[in-house]
Length: 373
Image 1 (tube, one colour):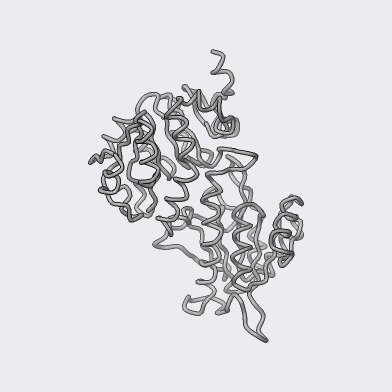
Image 2 (cartoon, rainbow, N blue to C red; image 1 turned 45 degrees about the vertical axis):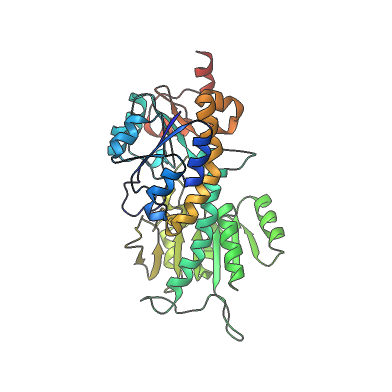
């Protein structure tokens, strides 16, 4: 199969879909890889490194799309990228189609694109590709929060996360006990913070409590407990994930108004709409804004801050799926890995994700229908 890796078009997206090690795996399995020049440069992978493992470096995005059967990328499709897609192509990316524009979905359907969302692929009841980015985002959320709690940022509280003898540490409140929430809790605990994790799933709370030796406080999430936790927080991290759907606002604007002056919000859920009512997407070059005297950090692609690590992590998590499709075709790959099918949002001109179909009012068809047609 011919696999293409275009350079990400968002100017602040520094990751690349496959590191040279992943390309090496594909080429040694008999597949061809076309990569746009400088696609890996912001992750410190040179064109020469890709050439050494057998990739063909091309000099335009158009050529990558025209020569490839499968496109591997990272950021959600833009309209310009959707226009470059070829009939019946396969595209792998963090698509977040439920938050996309309808014309992007219509382009995928019209061209009979098989669109696979990394964030929806399942294995053993987990989301392995998304988890690789969640682990990074969780750790970075603590670093980000620590930075904006310091006195070098105007409006901050000017506090040390771990405190010192006689001075209390920061209170870090985490909404969600999944992969992001766990990594936030572990990193904040390691910095000496007081950590409170809220989730409505008792099993998740037990797991995170057991792994961290009961050194954190866990609370069942509901409107009352969330309101209390938000008011207490020096750093509030939104770490909620709803598969394939826009996330509801669990923290209202009225709750934000009760927060300490100079408290910090890091809404890691912003790529799915955010779980905090006052959140709106920001950028790496302009990452924060202040509302109701609270500092908000809402960058959707937080892992791109450590682009080389993130590119390796994504390669490790995605390469087995890409190789399986390259070896067996998408239909064959889904038969051998049922969890892959849950990531397929469009197939053969129809929407195969019920939530997305309902959101945009398009026809929904289950994948097993295609298998029997």
